[in-house]
Image (cartoon, rainbow, N blue to C red; front, side, top):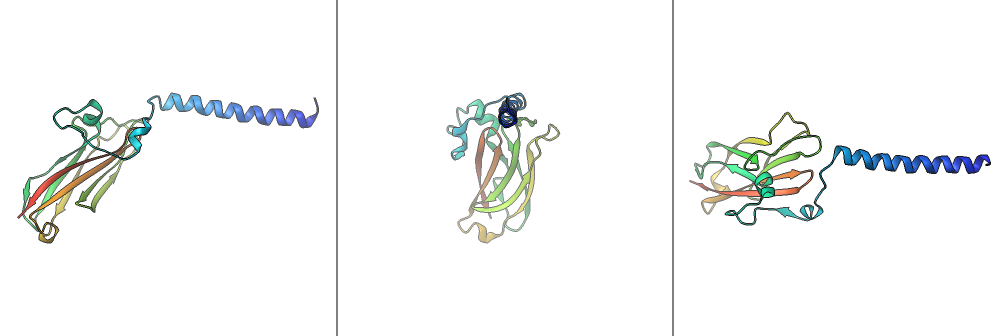
Length: 159
């Protein structure tokens, strides 16, 4: 075997071994398969009376007063799922954000470790002009690395 053939064979073998090693490592560290259809849009609870296990674990749950006074601060809590979503190196919540209608109000970026539970509290003050008809929608979104973008909302009366 000449030197050129040896080098081509060695390089090709290294590349194949590298790809095979990467594939095996990916399956070891990320054993849960990604459901690609969940990344095609924003996921929401389809039927609140009969939520699926996936919806129970991923749909943002907003806790806030149903009626607030304009100009006064109040707390809005956003939790990921009815029972808090697990956080680990292979399955985690990337961020939680809160919008007032279509306007961004706050965002918390989370780390893929087991130290946190995906629940965030925002202090919100709504001016009267935000709700000219007396109501405003709080919209929470969260992104799961395996199950895509999820959204939940809550209507609040502003007096």
